[in-house]
Amino acid sequence: MKKIKRIFIYLFLSTAAIVSIFPFLWMIVSMTNKSVDVTRGKLTPGMHFIENLNNLLETTQIGIALWNSFLIAVITTVLTLLIGSLAGYGFEIYRSKGKDMIFNILILSMMIPFAAIMIPLYRLFGRISADAPFIGLDTLAAAFLPTIITAFFIFFFRQNTKMFAKELVEAGRIDGLSELGIFFRIYLPTMKTTYAAAAIIAFMNSWNNYLWPLVVLQSPENQTIPLLISNLGAGYTPDYGVIMTAIVIATLPTALVFFLMQRHFVAGMMGSVKG
Amino acid sequence: MSQANSHYTKQQSTFVQRFKKNYIGWLFIILSVLGIGLFYFYPMVQAFLLSLQSGMGSNLEYVGLDNYIRLFNDPTFITALTNTILYLLIQVPVMIVLALIFSVLLNDPTLKFRGFFRTAIFLPAVTSLVAYAVIFKYLFGSDGLVNEFLLNFNLISEPLNWLTDPFLAKITIIIAITWRWTGYNMIFYLSALQNVDKSMYEAARIDGASPVQQFFFITIPLLKPIILFTSIVSTIGTLQLFDEVMNITSGGPGNATMTISMYIYNLSFEYTPDFGYAATVSYVILILVVILSFIQFKLGGDRE
Image 1 (cartoon, rainbow over the protein chains, first blue to last red):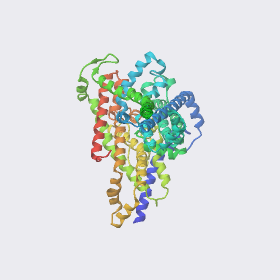
Image 2 (tube, rainbow over the protein chains, first blue to last red; image 1 turned 90 degrees about the vertical axis):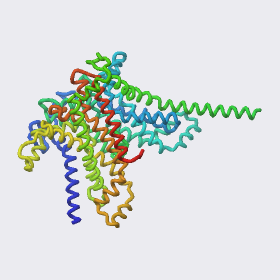
Image 3 (cartoon, each protein chain N blue to C red; image 1 turned 45 degrees about the vertical axis):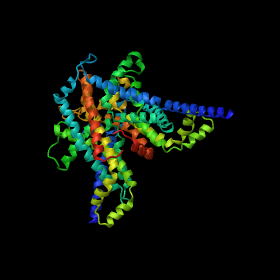
Image 4 (cartoon, one colour; image 1 turned 90 degrees about the horizontal axis):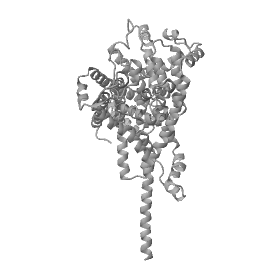
């Protein structure tokens, strides 16, 4: 009886594992097959990967899209971590009643759905366009500016700062470091793990972000990877081999981050409120 | 005299120090305060003002509560709202129950290949929403692999119209989201389970509790806070559902899979732009988020 139950559990988990993995295997296999073979349901690897890659490079601007996505993700990650950790540190180390109240108000913004502020944001950047076209609509800056300051990362860093030994701050003051010096020379190096986890979340969120770039980036030379894939997928005569190649390329960075930094990744996920 | 003087300067210096410390503290947070004010709260107020206006493009004039009244007579809005709530009521519970079952099974230290199962089930969470949505669109196409699989195993006699049948299209969306997010939620439960005191299960076993009873009377109550947390996060996420629907069905057939977020997008950028009415619809999402989070907090007990 117990053995039957065991077998049933393994069957159940194996089915779940296969269902979870299958789409990954399928996109990797399809990347090496011709479009017709993909539609025929061919599930064995073929010899057409180079051909698909060449087609992808010729028919789309994937190079530019990759560069845009990468640039936006790196800038977003750096600024998000810097601004978020400064604030998380500030709220915890220089604690005061007034700041705690402000903190609670900032946290409320986590409840605001993006769809609810999307239109005013779009109009805001429309107005900015008139005076400062370089950060207005259809610029990479507009794609990342509203995403770099979030209550989530302030909260995340404040929570982790609670575990930071405050005596180090005093020690830094006695050594004659400025307050900013303490932050950069003592706090930042000791909190590497927290920064790593935060960097993973920030990078992934930015790399995969779709709705806001869709709204704000119009011209093809400003396309990001999700926009490119979405456009390819919406085509009437899709070349499946080419699309699968694009999808694998888009998934690679986040999958790599996951496999190389699994522990930080999970730590980041646990703190992530994006859903 | 000199003593009083030094006392005075000491007091003054601590005051100066405190002021300086405080003022530096504000410098650390000022960028975030301004940023969140500019990119969250200011748009929130703007959206409300917009919701009281109507017109095409930037030709807007105040119309009072007309937009809110229009909501009730707008069939597309009602469809979008019904669909969103339907996704929420079916998908979130199914996913949470599945994630709970996986985590309980995978928490058993005598189970073989635990690491493999855990990684495999979590893997969908690393994909970009757009990328997996496009994959699902092809898998569920009328000549896609899902139909082929079901035909081969004689589970169906003719291909199902997963994407073009109003009912099945909704099911496809629900399957897709469940695939993407179940492993993600499982990780939360798994790490919570690792902190559970094993002796509780020991005691329950001695008292003759079956595994199912242990699940309902020990595991669920202990995981209540994290279940509450994940269900609020999933609720907020589902209320904003956009990427998947946009890329799998584009809201179709008809408006059968349309969500509120997609309707807001269409009202602003696909149809003749009506920012005022779109802002009104967007306030509905905000109100739903607030109400549903509040209900879940109440149901979940009075915890912070």
